[in-house]
Length: 71
Image (tube, rainbow, N blue to C red; front, side, top):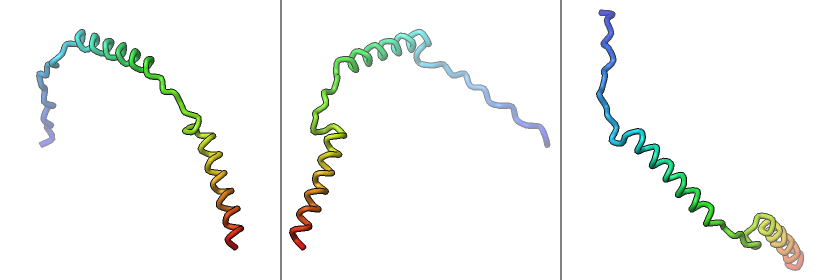
C-alpha cells in the first residue's frame, strides 16, 4: 500500500557527441562575432532620439500657435 514505484530509467543517447557539439558551438560563436563586427549600423541624425523629441516639441508649439489664430 505505501510502496512507491521506482522512477523509470531510460537509456537515452544523444545524436551528437559532446566533442562535436563543442566544436559547432565554437564555430557558431566565431561566425556570429565576425558577422556582428562587420555590420555596424550607421545612425541617421533624423532618426536619433534627441532629434525626434525636438521635432515633437516643435509640432506641439506649431499646433499651439496655429490654435491661437483659429480663436
